[in-house]
Image (cartoon, rainbow over all chains, first blue to last red; front, side, top):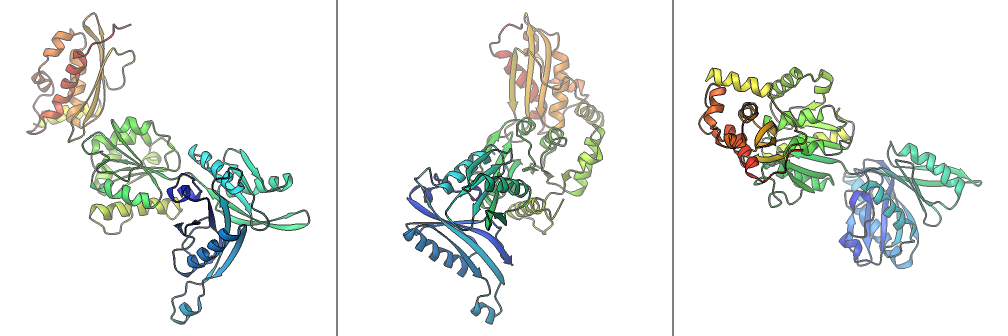
Length: 352
Length: 125
């Protein structure tokens, strides 16, 4: 389920005639999942994803989804996280979650949810964010707005679409949420589901840390490109989880990559022969994150060399070095974990 | 060794003939497969004479210094003479030899140049 969107090519989905799509539309309390997170339940009982980190809530969603697949339609579940038994022994999380469940006919291209997700997937493939607006009541419907203002689908009424488009524009740079719209004398609750292209990590250096990093990044649904000048290192056998492997001159390869704010470049070759040329190519680009493996002393030396070449302090300050959060790790998987942790912290605004 | 080191660093920080060569009619990329040095040597050869030579590299200081010296030396040389160019000439220009185990770094540009000249090439326009 790439990017929280239904993908009919996904093996679990491809085999099903219809599926139930459960979406976390709002949450209070300490749920760890983001609003917009989805779980898919197939007619055969198979599950993909989850709207909470597990336990009794997902179980209730699966039960409701199973029922929906039999009878059709859609439903809203409001589930308290203050489970009685858990409360007694002090293990409750607290709060509530609201989950919208839609039955989607996977093979019907006219199905509004399926069609909206197909349109959204195409936009994301073009590196555009989208917002999908779906009413929480009434019949299934979906209206999609892309980052570039292209629209798809309908909520059933042109005026309602206009109002939804205005809110979707705001949500595009924010987070998914439910909004109430007064329309035709009634209040309509609409869920605005923001979906953005995947964060991409370009890993320079195909060593042990890179091997661990690409494995963990896959779990985080982050797209990875491994770059190295050495074809004996940058191999599919060593990097089964990497989305892409590129062998060549690293500075030329990164110069050819679209430097979006969602692109992170991590220099973990620990070799100036790649670090300096790649930094020269990227310090003035729009790339969202630039990090380099190495000690503080080494970082100072690299900055000094680049400053001699004319890079400003502001440009050099974009470089995160030593790379990663300081979690005291030493082994390649531990260092990879610290790098990914820093990337998550930067992406969520917890770290600049 | 101090002099050699200074010469290498000077060429590394201020490489001559670095960057792509427009209208090259001979080009080759070379790599040291384990250390990762990568270099592209581009030449413009007119009537058997090297009119222009440039290089692009993500490589160590030794490799870049060697390429910097080499591209300067071969300009104006016949391709036959350039094929015979000895690594010792480049080492002399750098006032020394690389440490044991790093010879491959200084040899890579020359090896790549020879392979570029060995390939059939179109006439320079």
